[in-house]
Image (cartoon, helix red, strand yellow):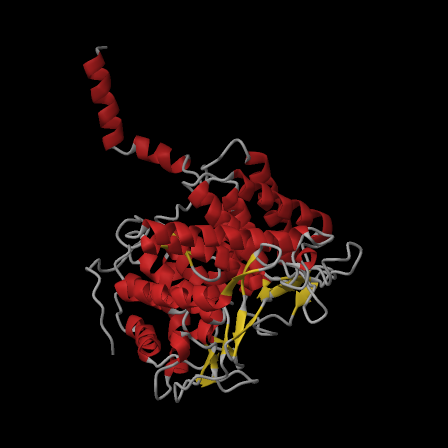
Length: 512
């Protein structure tokens, strides 16, 4: 047989589908590969932690929102309370898929297809959490898989949220009753939190893009336009705004995810996800972050950089653990200054400095894990530590390791992987329980009690970011994927072949 004849036979076999059948049988599940062999054992350790945490939830709290990992029973005091909407299931889907945990993923997908509903949820739930965790988790899975279950369920969730926007100024209320189709404010304030109403863009935009129903996008774009046009005291955004009057609440400004930081993060990431075409989002981010640097960022006497809070424009030199995402935000935000190398370098360095300060809050505790809040400028040795007025607890939060991941991807400085591994070791030593993982009541007491809560964010964000930290950059590259505020990756328009847009049209800004 000649070489030419052999090639003809191969071509014929391929034509009739034999090769296709072989490729289908050997197709790998999830986002396998992308192994960095230098740290693969560490990546496998994080994967084992996810399997263990998931097993505890699936066996002891299936269908409930979260797990009490000390007692092995459901935890009913989560953000969605006793309403059984499977928060941990939906929040974990993309982590399971990314890690290639096929059996666990199929179990979760089946529950979403067969059991997930909000029709009978007669209680008020957070609009913000439903958007970023439930809709965001489902949208992320649709992007990765193209599975129609996810596009159907994600649009269903978005539709359930629409009554929250029925205010005179179209600023959303904080909570929604899905069964009654009624909206309400928080029980403790009539105002909405800036970060909560400003963090909805990407999920509503992407829903319009994949369904072809453009009605979802202008709903949240109008919120952005309103915020952009409003008078802002000293050009800064307070944390609270009334949905019916658009009047600002108390003059409190912060960089927390539910404060101004959530809005700034969403604007930066909206610009990145638009393939850097959404200039309004970029401009809003750049103007706001300039004021943050001028008014809220400082240097302690001990040489640590912090981003504090403002109360009536008085700086409070305290950071929340949740504010530690700002290190990654400033580093990622350096890309917005692509036409000014000086500012680009300045913002990247600020991200590095904040990462160091947050790492110090971990290093200076007895457990190697950081407290919920910590302060600066008493004496240098007490910088980045909790005081009497602060919470000394650790809640399995992802903010610090998220910053490590972003800085690793941008700089490839080995210390960020080293710091991430320190977190893994501390989690194993102090937070692992019989049924999963739990937070600590006091990070300064190695023998102190745990809080018993395995929050869904631990599965959807903390372990995901650690797994990616010990993977190659080709696994969810930052140029093609943008993480929403709950850690769910959404595809960048045009350049990501997982975008799956219904109509790929040039970006056009419009308002309603």
